[in-house]
Length: 325
Ligand SMILES: Nc1ncnc2c1ncn2[C@@H]1O[C@H](COP(=O)(O)OP(=O)(O)OP(=O)(O)O)[C@@H](O)[C@H]1O
Image 1 (spheres, rainbow, N blue to C red):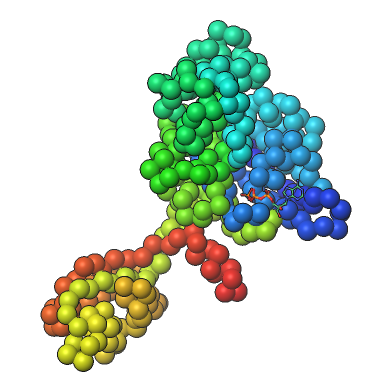
Image 2 (tube, rainbow, N blue to C red):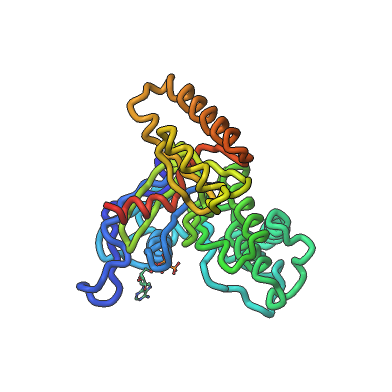
């Protein structure tokens, strides 16, 4: 049994003729970490609220942990941990009291709730600060407290809505590492959303990409990130006497040697067509030959080679590919 299945799920807010926040969405989510990505307004929060039985779909069906969202919302909410997008923390409560309370609301006896609350607050890195009022917490600490309350009842699935919202880069990395640990070390399936397309690449096993309520892709993360065949080159060195900068000199010299390439920012992007039609076992040899050619060209021009690297795919490319269709 999968963790989440939806079948042609559609949600229109207001009048039935209005724009669909979700439009015929059919997805399957398994164990591990699943990233749900899409720009603001793509329908991520709407989907999560429907999956929790908090919002009714206009049409379509879905099951969460085998429970029907239309008739078994309470069973779903008991089994699932939910971290909402917006601040939901009472400022005049200490984190420990809040998380104990949430544990009891989810059905834990008082002693078990206290024990679990102390445990999860330690796991999310709030061991020291758990006796402080949450009103004085930083955004990062608030996000951690929200995560702790979602974990306290030992859920069978956890849904995290924009857990990195408002965090600085270091706190964002910490939160992403925590999410990955929950999915992989604790073995709790995770559905995590982000409007930043790239940030879930590193931690998700599977990615679902939404665009204006439509499903763009639902695939193993690895299939987004494979080798694109493009090779990126960066050189440093002197401009030519006529003022042509090092990068342009290198690009011209490569083109003169039959390599199809173009400038991309400070880099030179070499097109993958050199490898088209080449059997896989020969592709590595061609790649090595290209590398040698790039190295020799730089040496002939007296330029330093900073890097020659294959470019892997990015989640952002999915949107570029769609726009180009
Ligand atoms: N209660 C509501 N009433 C009317 N329209 C709504 C309501 N909630 C969401 N919408 C609309 O539905 C669409 C999807 O919103 P949703 O919040 O699900 O997207 P999201 O991907 O979670 O974006 P964000 O990251 O900004 O929350 C948007 O166009 C939004 O304006």
